[in-house]
Length: 131
Image (cartoon, rainbow, N blue to C red; front, side, top):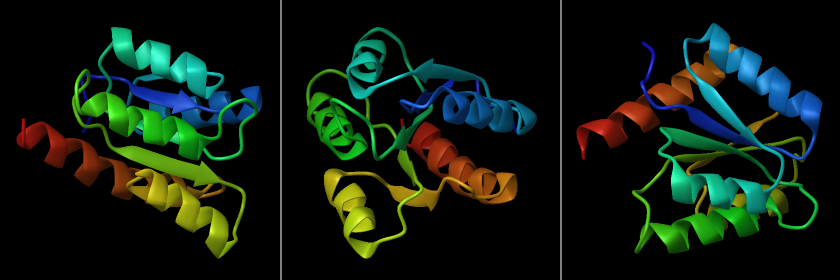
């Protein structure tokens, strides 16, 4: 069930960006990569994406801060995007920060491809249907 728009992967760790991109490729999705929140925001202003997969713990701008900025931009510049947080942190506090920032859901970085697929498909295709 491929989507015509790519999914933006935002993570400051190269191996995480690449492994997530490979996982999405296996699931039939295209992807684009950003190594930090600032690069992600620039990409979002110039291209369309089906969704964003956002790391929480990044240098310079956390995933939560980047998501807050995405939600602010949606009020004037870009359409509403599903933002899926991915983190290796398991604490309630981090998950709450992610959700409070506007992320739609938070998954562990070691989630299975099936879990990611089961989350992405409804978020992406519900959004597409409501346009």
